[in-house]
Image 1 (cartoon, rainbow, N blue to C red):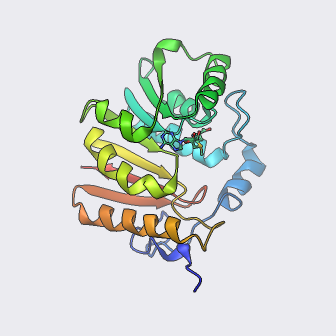
Image 2 (cartoon, helix red, strand yellow; image 1 turned 90 degrees about the vertical axis):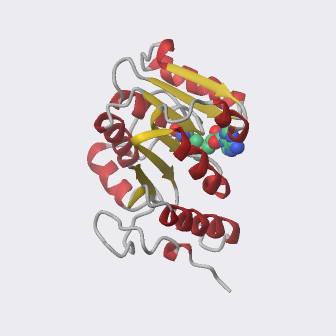
Length: 218
Ligand SMILES: C[S@@+](CC[C@H](N)C(=O)[O-])C[C@H]1O[C@@H](n2cnc3c(N)ncnc32)[C@H](O)[C@@H]1O
């Protein structure tokens, strides 16, 4: 039986479809915007970030006037850079990645973009081990961009890190490219169920980059 993951988030509204059916993958809305504005290229990292994801992250960091942000999955530092651009000028981004090579690239990306070292705290480690060491209710924004199967766990821990009024963002929650991956589908369903079960959470799926699940913590 083929499991179609596009249907796993039916009750979370997108910005253009209350039933959550319309969304665009990395080759949908993003590629259209990239044709107008070009790929986001905030640094020298090897990964180019779809322009709409960079814009959404920058916007969220700005609207939250974020002074403290946690990122799970530093990678090449491109999403970190987008958030830093929207954050308060003295805001600090804490970013976790288990891969020291990725963080070396990220350091170079951020330095090349002129980001002061005092504005970032790059932690090399497994997120499950690092997150419990962070202060609860101390962060304005938590961004998750790592292994999708672990997203339900990050919802639980990430919610604890947020101050009331903060936001939690998951990248890639509508896996268009991998519709038959049962583990990923299961994790997406579990995530959806857990979001709906918590009345303090207000979710919205933005239909960009395989779905950006954005959750406000009230
Ligand atoms: C999709 S990439 C992140 C891309 C990044 N946000 C960027 O802008 O380039 C996912 C990253 O998550 C990291 N990762 C995967 N599982 C992890 C875990 N359990 N703990 C910490 N980092 C993890 C990987 O090493 C990888 O660099």
